[in-house]
Amino acid sequence: MKSRRPRPSKVVARTGEATAEGFLQLGCRARFEGDLGGSGLVLIHGVLRGGIDLDGDLIVARDGRLSDARGRAVRLRVEGHAAGVLSVTEAVEVSSTGVLEGEVASSQLQASAGATIDARLRIGLPRGEGRE
Image 1 (cartoon, rainbow, N blue to C red):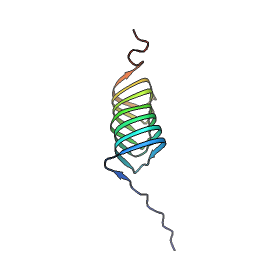
Image 2: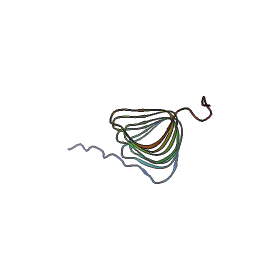
Image 3: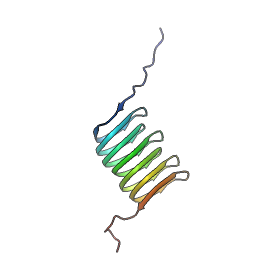
Image 4: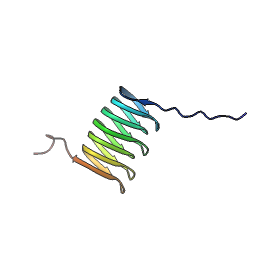
């Protein structure tokens, strides 16, 4: 009798809202469209499209895609593809495999050799803090 490996399930959320507390991982075959909010770490291997209100880190893995995003996070690491209008409180990091597009505001930017950035960037201290 042959042993059959179970087929990976495919999760598709057409629209919705989700709240992340602690840790949320979007798998490589998963797709979420809607508003995501909460605190903690969000790791994207699949596709996330929509609003983001995150008091924590957002990581777009090498096989992940952040599409038509709008909103904010504390830190953003891009190893895959991220596009949208984002405000990042602390730091944006784009790895050598990462692609960043759209508009991004952050206090810091770190890009590795090979990173692709096609975005309007506003990097530095927030308005009213330390600038005269």
